[in-house]
Length: 400
Image (tube, rainbow, N blue to C red):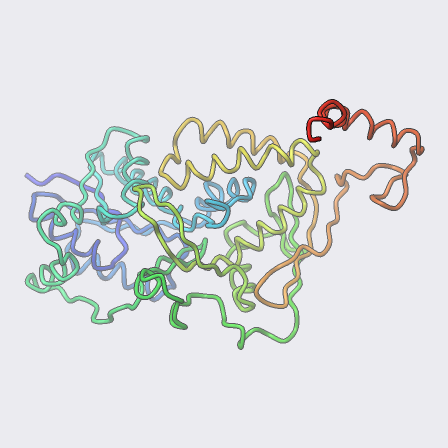
């Protein structure tokens, strides 16, 4: 008797292979595609058609845009930090894919879920830990299973499908590409060989020769730290990010080459492109610098770094991540205002800030004017540096 299982499905080679593999082991396969912004209407239709031709019991497409904004982008912008100071966590849509698949499990009354992750990367960790945190489910990972017996895994998958009468897309890609609303990552080829990326290693960001001649200026309005309007138009967060991606990609903003420490201990090297996210982070950081207190601006990055580490390493549902996120949310109570961004290409700057929350002291401008006297300034300096001055006075003679 067949048992129901929900497969997180993308229509690619790995998840296409998973369908007959699971069916032949007694599973009744239901596929879910969580559209997190990486495909157009044509590709979405292909995924649905692919599921049908593979003979799945049912297929469901879920709009993941709103969930990826509220579940990841909003708190990530609050945090304002990339992993290891750089990488903007572009595959964090995996957690929302898990939630969509588990919601389908609930509808079908099954406790079995499958994915097409390999046994060599971070995604398997993120997927499995998220599932385990959200309930008691049986996790089936066909690609991990066949890696125990086969070294040329993709060739094996392709032959497996062809032997059963299923076509395989002929196009061989030079790079492994992940694309969603957050951005694009590219790996493989010369990137993995620690060489300079070829010109083909591009997703959205235009090369310098194609940047527009005129600078780009946009205004982003924040309320309680969340971006709510673009150039005066109130717009849903995920739609704003998509628009920012299109605007800033034309100017090559948000592209980087990153080497980092993966969860499983390997070094990972990728090209990434996140034009919209980098624009949001730049605007939000500039506003925070103006409206948060000195101590908030000093301490908050420590919380942010840990929050980012937890998300990167698969602990999206860990209670510490929830605790840290509560702090980040609290810190945003006064992060209200409008920031103007400008780019001529490559980088983006926050060139002006409008907010009633800017911490200006009446009668004082840095290095220009103040409403306190010289004696007060001298007294502050004396007390502020007392410990260091005393140490120098007492130990000066020890140096001869």
